Image (tube, rainbow, N blue to C red; front, side, top):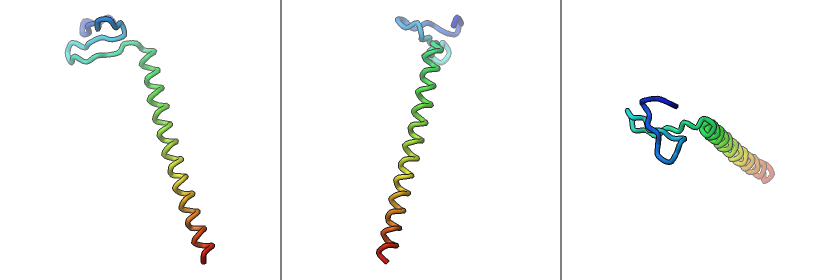
Length: 72
């Protein structure tokens, strides 16, 4: 990324500093894409965990209802 708005970060060719905001920006596109994939994977895992927890709760509720029916 050859732009006068950015200054290379010392000892790291993948990073530049935005002169106007002082933000550090990663210009390594493959690392950026890999990170996006990690984030997406993490979100999917969290959704799956949430679904599993909901199913476990539903099964527990069904078991309790069955126990009530059997005891009557």
